Image (tube, rainbow, N blue to C red; front, side, top):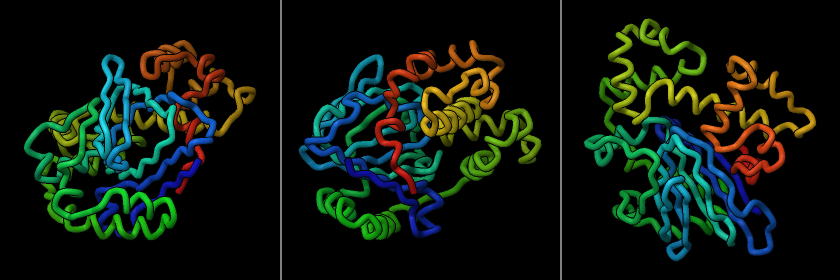
Length: 278
């Protein structure tokens, strides 16, 4: 298994891109064959070899294809087919970043969707060879990061910030440290204006995004601990649930399993590829 995650080196790129990542499963690697991908408010551009197949179980329905593709923000838990060897080089965008690009700002951002990326600006107009970029990522992560910064620069220069994206950016800075009801007052705008701008920019409500962030923080906490260390009552209160039954209902609805099932299976992508770090 080969994997890494690194932030952009350019502050200009980092305004719109959270990180770059690589995951590669070799033929003789033993790991989860069908890991689950937890909900994520960010969009990912996943760069893959031209002939490499992908399959997502969206529950309901499946999406399959070959090559590079977009994984848009999703509220559902997806199941991935990682039963065969594969390699993915990913670009994780900041929440709401795609809205600032002309080709995305005119239409509502797609949610819970996987879409072929052959006609994206990155490949079509900039003449990037995906296979060569992946080979560089496999052998020299730092050079790959530098090249991605260079490639993305002209594309992201087209980003335009309007009042909706500016309000959303400010809201995201405080979303995890404030109540939703207090954000409007903190940002000197009405709650209605804030909610409307945030949903227009991200495709999500403030509550949905806050919930996803909380889930991500909780999964990171769980990943770092063995089953014998987990006290689910303590976990429930630590992450803002009223009690353990509230946490159980939330996990079952969001991820499709109970805490006890998670303890036994550990089948999320963070468990399969948790070594990815910056």
